[in-house]
Image (cartoon, rainbow, N blue to C red; front, side):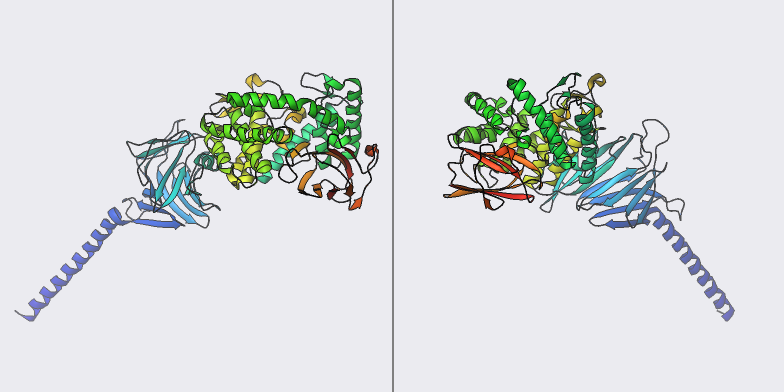
Length: 614
């Protein structure tokens, strides 16, 4: 073979190799475009993966995407577009974008799915765009253990590697177990999926769902709602509803009457507004006139802790205690859950009955199935457990039972509406007072049990109810539940006066209350006061009560169960008794036959001690 021929042959071989190499690159690019082009982004334990469409060859249009977390896999592709019930073309996948705040999966029609990490180690997957419209989406979903139909609460839970996880969904979402898909209902309210580790094996998933989906009110939001309601109530108590002489108040029916509930609420609020002295004088005149002209119309003389006449209050307590204890005995004997409709059940029995009745009450409560109780009775049972641990047997022995009532009966009865959260007391109906009481008890349970979810749900229940306030703070008595709304029947006027629910809305104020001293002083001992009890300690030689009330403001209190008094100190100084003690800034009197100590105290500091030597 000639040199020229060899050269030509070598050249052809080179071009052949070059062409084959070029074709290989093209084929590789095509294969990559068809099968290998994608991206992955991670946000903590959550991961988003996308695959790009084959055409255009070098385009970046997302063909399919998946969100993965601890075995959960939520898939999105061209066959799962976002549908608009109002009509129009569905929105399909378009892109993925990672940025400092999280990861966005973009759809047509300016919709996007935003993955964000929350402060509590959970993740949020929220739909943004098309605000106010209802959307629906069917999404293939896989979790360890497989999908199961959802119960009353749209929440999925699973376990992986010995740990529990959850996925909470907007209300109306459902599982198609046969198709292995999740059908999301994304209304004008929540359009967010939340997932993360469960707080513990005993976490209440119903409460978790409310925390995730109901836009629970934080401390600042609660304060704003409550302040607006109390400002309107204050206007009514001091101006719009008050008679010209300041001693009567206009009721819901328009009549001016002596309203025994107004005085304590008005004065507790006056302390917060620095108007206590002037308002105290007017309430004192109103109570004094009523006691002179119609004493039988006064039920408890509750305002006496602010203005005096303590003996009038005690007289009424003594007159009612025997019949109250007998009624409780009857209900106990019948095993009737109506027993727990008795307000302040445990404190009343601790103070005015034998301790064995307290034990019987707790025993009966334990025999009742929490999930089958009527909501009103469930509230009484919860209060019973909380009061027992606070006043009868310190140590939290009833904490687990209290948590069970919240988890199995109260939280499942709370309905999320466009107006907020409400306790459904009967089918399709809300009793406003019960819903407020539930909120107050859940706030207390949250503090006692160390459960921030319970407290947040409680705040939201209260804020939702007071937001419905009318002129002068009146509230509707009932609400009708329909779909996602809660509204008064036929837009009825307010029937619940603010003073009737003040103790639930402003439980942290100086409201009058009877506090059992069973643990600190002894059986049957109690304190009637509007001050905060800081401590109560007893010894064989005496007792000490430390209370908190704004300095410089006079108030009264009664202590029952003081067996004798040889010496009493106020402001660290021995103080002599005086039958007319109420006319002085500070003073006391003692009823040896009834073992009752009456005190008037004007604090020189916000916290004062009353020291008694036997």
